[in-house]
Image (cartoon, rainbow, N blue to C red; front, side, top):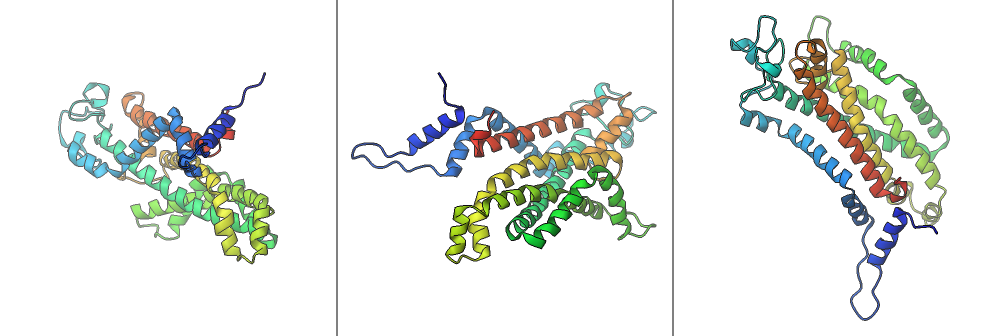
Length: 339
């Protein structure tokens, strides 16, 4: 005896909920695909908890100035150097657990003596802002070029396809390390210091250039499959323009892979930006950065392991939560993918 799968059960339940009841009562309005997706997502406890955690990180990033005002400290002041009795002669906090106290919740940074809690809050702000910008830009570029390549075909498809293959062949991390100084050297004179805004823009630019190819290839394959379907042919026969076919027929059928790909890409960009900071080619001092906290922590963990714990645990929680959220969104859009 076989039992229906969970996807089949959901489909039957949704169909039954939207069916017109027998008798003379009023008809029940069927649920839209968005409502069905939201209903399936709310049933997924893992997805809901992950969404709350991710939302908490974004609120911390957005409200960093407010948190700083309420906390009474900033990420730039060198409290340990300005006030005697906080650091020893080697630059390490005198108090146990990295200098944690009611005044300094997460302790003090070895060497400069900055507040670790505010460094972490503003570091999250820096990393998430870069990741969000890169995700949005790479998604837009990938959607435009992927749909263009798949729908037009011919030489256009060939040229865009070869560009995608070339970008995907690059070792991304190595290319980032090499190319970022080249971009800045083309703008800033050797005797001048690189402005913080230029380093920020350079990181966003290089990550975007290397990031759009993945979603473009995915959408190209989707469009190649969809453009031969009956509803696309029917739209063409009725005289619909290419723009109408793309925006009214193709794009509504591509929102699912676009959203899923974006939710899975964002934590990858957070990790990539942190990796650049750890390697010394990310954001420069004194801008707080998640990756540079790892760099400092890796140098002082033998004497102050507490400093390394906070950025490490926070990034682990964020990446795991966002990946679980991406999986839950994918399952909510397409319940047949659930395992």
